[in-house]
Image (cartoon, rainbow, N blue to C red):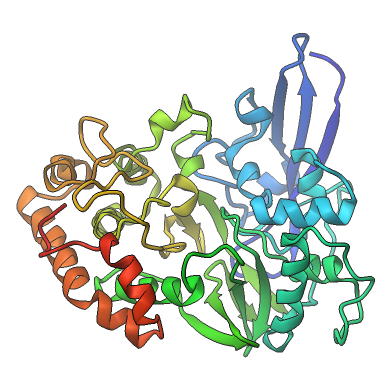
Length: 426
């Protein structure tokens, strides 16, 4: 091994708490061939705490270690999940004035309000959590900031009329906006004692995306799927979707943070073409049986989501859009998020991002979906009943649900091909 190239301390907010404690140390080295190798070790004082918890249920179980990985550029899955998404990277790179920032630097540059309960820093003592959040009334300024970045325009030194008087990019950084995945402009805002993820429209959206996503979440709820609370806010002539963050809970002295890992981490996979062979609902079900404290409930929920994604042609169902959440000491499937219908090429072909058939097929037809029922601990008859129920709700109620959410008739017509016809075409 070569000398240590980079290192930082890893902090975590323990269940029921609001402040970071130091959990361990992460180092990133280069071996003799120049390949990145990551190492992590829990601190002894942390392991000896009676309330210590593991950082994830796969790679970093609460043992003395040390742990090493040469996969994913030397990043353990739980640490990779704490990196900013594509949008967050754009904001940070814009702030740093660089074309690209390394993943290691992103751990340190990112705001501490990233998804989940982890934080990172150079000092052994963790910093006090940030308590400054933009309010929902600042959505107009945040939308302007997002437009500035999307248009690659020169940022203003201060957002005109901004309550805080900080620069536009700095204001968006202050708002957080990191998540487990996504390229859409977003920021965290505070409203009525809760944190919300504000998702802004893009100029190249094919339809009113905030209203369509809000309607899809409501349609999923009608199918019995767990989804976060959401609402729409009007900002000028555009709509912004607010989704309540389920990895945060208000407390008198701050916000409790809940550990969270993506299905990408649970599958021990990456986003390379080779690793995408592990992008599978059935493999995810296998891992969920081992990691979840209530596997039967979570597997039924995951199967229902598979049926729903097929019924609405959600081809953005990749493993970063599924996650495990630990509100306390136990891991459960998180509420569903980032649900949107996709544009279909044909009426009967629905290729999901993750394999859904026992033969490894991504083609979400009825026989493929039911072929893996046993992996979800479901008898085929029960699995068929779930599929039929989801298809019936979607095919009969999607248009009314979307119109109720304010989606225009024009947008409904453009989206109509995404939904099941008669409930049996998948």
